[in-house]
Image 1: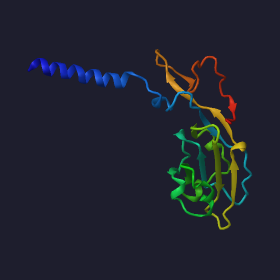
Image 2 (image 1 turned 90 degrees about the horizontal axis):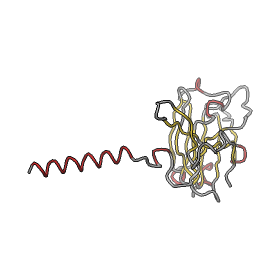
Image 3 (image 1 turned 90 degrees about the vertical axis):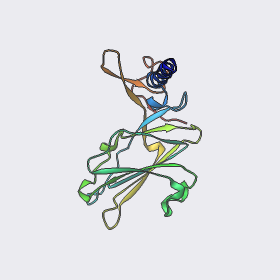
Image 4 (image 1 turned 45 degrees about the vertical axis):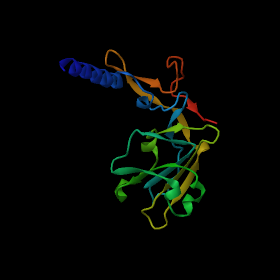
Length: 193
């Protein structure tokens, strides 16, 4: 009886240790080998002097939001499933499965530019042949509702770097999709497909 208990304890410890010790791609933001991830950077957008940015909705085709790296103070974020959304702005996205919306909590939290959202979202490419990003930027707190739509070509997509702990406890940045991070170009601007 004692031997059975000892064996079960050893097996349980081995299973737990294996789950903790073995690195997985998902833990580093990867789900498939060779899948690319990028931090999203916005172009300069002219915001009218009597308006601000209070909503940024990003729709991703043939890819998905992999991580939210930061949220501006007094803003919130939510994920959306475009086929379940209503309104004319969603018609072209009925076959897209991933969208993220950053929104201001109160009128005083609206932004004058998009700098605080630069690098705030990491996107992962599922299929480079059809990968696309569209973002609606708007001020939904004023009567006229200023808005602009951005397309993938207007964004800068930078290879995503993950913070990795080295054996001495210091952090370094490493390209998630690179098999040799020392040869990879740091902060490379890219435009997949």
